[in-house]
Image (cartoon, rainbow, N blue to C red):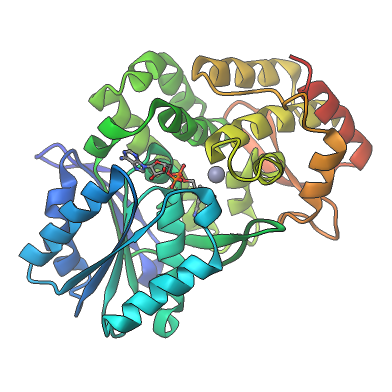
Length: 370
Ligand SMILES: NC(=O)c1ccc[n+]([C@@H]2O[C@H](COP(=O)([O-])OP(=O)(O)OC[C@H]3O[C@@H](n4cnc5c(N)ncnc54)[C@H](O)[C@@H]3O)[C@@H](O)[C@H]2O)c1
Ligand SMILES: [Zn+2]
């Protein structure tokens, strides 16, 4: 990480010809235009943003692009995970065609992970790939979804079943946008922050734990440092395994059961981060049953999730059998057998476990006990 004189932080994602910088800076959205002009130098831009409060950030981004003499178009996607579909990606591509965007154009995603995942996929597909710049506005997207090049949409059968690897050309994070984020969304973002600490960096997790009150109170210094720390961890994992041939899978900690919970809840009941919190705790119980995760590690996971006010139990009305069935369609499963990332200790996770269904069942039963 570089901390420059003006107080902003830059995390570099080193991927050879596809390398890029993540810039974290309060008020950064107003500098989006010059950044896109410098890094991409596009013929034109499409700003894809969400509905509601986030639309104002889209306008700010469009204004800055226009001021940098970039021909700019805008498009809004109605909010909600249920909109994360191929149909909406099709509409993004139609909008690009209408605006006569060519191969040298750029798609700028201004919003949460839903907007980022869809705009990224649109950029990957339109004319077989145009540039994408991510300007995430939720904590979850700032610490996770905007970095690493995974783009995708859901099918009825499950989460993110269609997608592409398409690295952004730059990520511009403006923590000031978090001022308008509902508290529930802020907490959901903390689930991925905690995940990053748990899987790779016990020291970072300690800092997050110490700063928890300040993070929930949106203290700018605490937020900036959590965002930069998470981006560093994610960047290092992605650099080692860009297309998830092996090691990158650690980032899926909590997602095997988390995705099933999200799907069963109709993408409405739980925020992604909340489902991941439930999934991380349940994965600890799977790890305990397999003799991989020590009980005191599970307790530490539960404690920090509770400190962030995140859910940790599988809801009583969510039958373990239904969760197991939903896991079968997850793309992390292999031959119908769900695959798990398990914690060996705080700060170290390993991917590639495929426990017997009886073990998963036992862990899910335990996950329901409050
Ligand atoms: N590509 C990846 O590597 C990756 C990683 C993690 C998560 N994801 C995906 O990200 C998605 C979840 O992202 P999310 O949690 O950001 O959800 P989201 O995109 O649905 O955003 C949450 C809500 O906050 C609103 N919002 C966004 N920014 C705001 C702001 N600054 N102020 C007020 N409201 C604002 C949005 O309109 C939305 O209603 C999931 O689909 C998940 O699968 C992808
Ligand atoms: Zn996630």
